[in-house]
Length: 248
Ligand code: GLP
Image 1: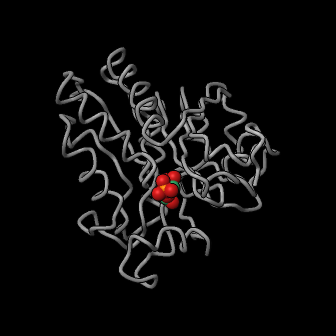
Image 2: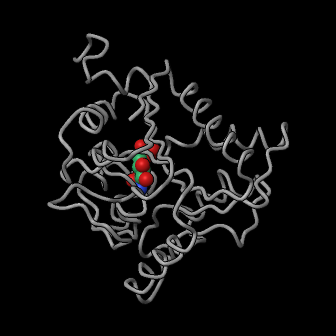
């Protein structure tokens, strides 16, 4: 695992967007695995800038998202489909046919999960899988539990995740309690994995993910076993590792 420490969130976004842009230039039909959340917003903005100012071409790129809330249609303002359109996909020249996000309104969750997995497998999984991390260590919506779950599945969100993510909803009651998420097989089968985090709220999760035991209680820790993983964090997100002599 390669650990890149930068001084702040903006530098994290610049560094991350450079990695993605290099791949897009070298392999114009690359498969990108993408997350939502506040953390990748700066990366998406920078990629949009590169599309506008530097002709970064997404026309052959295929992008799949890691998760979607169950019960929200793609037109719901808090759906991850809407998030991706608003913050990234609507602003680049990616073909809508090449963007994939689980259907949160499916009438058959098992079938949706199975078909999403089959599609990812038919792609050969991601050339670059970008991930954020939840304060409790979740990646995509793989929540802490007794075992790592391999396949795309329906996750019941933990109280801590509902607490963390309900800030985007008018009230906590409106936040869905379940989501469809890719599993560890798709994440670990990616050719390159890039996990990003910034700020003190992620410090505990980053310390355990990078330097703790590999355990499903801290889902992010599985990336220690990935053969080509890069973690890009700012100093605040590394503050619980003791690497800077500041673990308070
Ligand atoms: C959600 C997403 C994750 C994301 C996490 C962190 O729970 N399912 O993929 O990594 O939020 O969000 P943020 O970047 O806003 O802290």
